[in-house]
Image 1 (cartoon, one colour):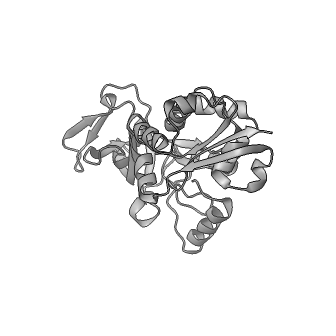
Image 2: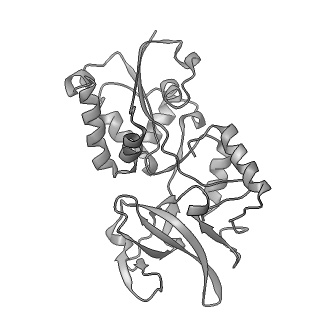
Image 3: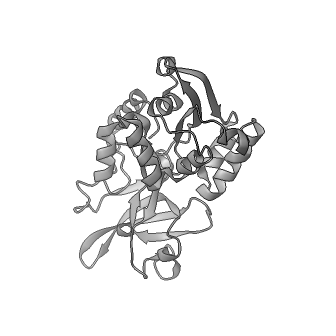
Amino acid sequence: MFKKIAIAFLLITMLFINGISSQPASANQVSSAYSFDGSKHFGPIPYYSITKSKKAYIWNSSHTKRLHNLKNYPSTIWLVSNAFVRQVKGNNEVYYKLYSAYNPKLKGTVWSGYLKKNLQKLPPLFDSSTAYANYLKTSRATKLSKLVAQLFPNTPIDLTLSNYAYETHESLIKNFSDVQRIAFDDNRLKTQVQKMAPSVAIKYIENHLNALGYTADKRQSMTKYYIGITIAGNSEAMDNPTLFTLSQKSRYPTVTKDLIDLMDYSHCTIVLGIPK
């Protein structure tokens, strides 16, 4: 969610007061009344394909023509703009209207069972630099952060600096010297870069670093430094463990008094520092 907890709960309270609810009782027992419309809430929700089927088709809106096959897009992040229930063999099944985060022209309707939310844990959910570094290396949601870390091959990941990249509390850097914060000053560009495929976005970030004087030679020489990274990319990034667990359990896009699924591109930050 990439929000401060207070803001998240304020939004939840507002939606509860207005009586908005868009989540079935459970992932396996969905009400025929369930629906989701991102245009009425906080925009689309990021998903990725988990199916191994060779016949996981994306259809046109009337479900009469196959448009695409998910097997051809294993690395694509799909943005779910709408969800609705359709009766299939007497059962309520949820379908998504979606489009590719990297190519909006690639769109259609697909069965929800082929997809999973692209969730990301933010630095406050970790208790050690090792755990956070391993997460950046292995999580699907942190591909861009992993590529950024590789641009600094001799600079270890540090959890405290990563928390500072996210929250900017000066107390977090009291044990570091020569702290250098690197971010996109242009919010529009910052958002555009995070929406790109990681393999494309990293080229823009590398060019940005080069322009700031962080050339390949400079980055390779930063052996005394540690690095903090907080980048959302096309993920639903969360700093609250309870909400993260709720979102994991809620297969479909959710807007209730307990949970609001949303994306936020407000942070894309690198921090460098030397331990004192």
